[in-house]
Length: 113
Image 1: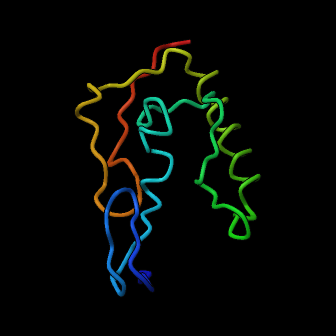
Image 2: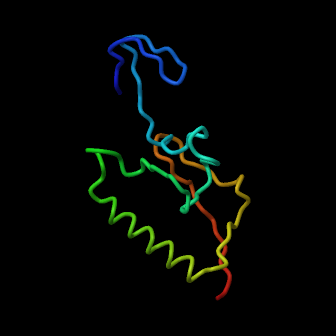
Image 3: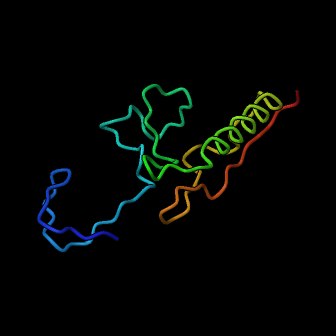
């Protein structure tokens, strides 16, 4: 939690001095004013200053390894199962409550190679 030291306006909202303000990282990169269709997973999205691994002095030292692991895992999964599809309608996919943006489950259906 952070507290305002003086009155400030943020996003058109007036916040008085001494009010608690919380940064919600789960909202990062989901601003429809900044990203076209922000809820869509688009690995090829251009001009994507993603905040998932932090920024500036708070940049995650493991970011390069995490990106490499994700690329290897997704490339392997999709090449092994090219017909991978959702097993339920998208409206039935649930998200865990709280600060972390995580799925409850992701039921998928595979087809033979």
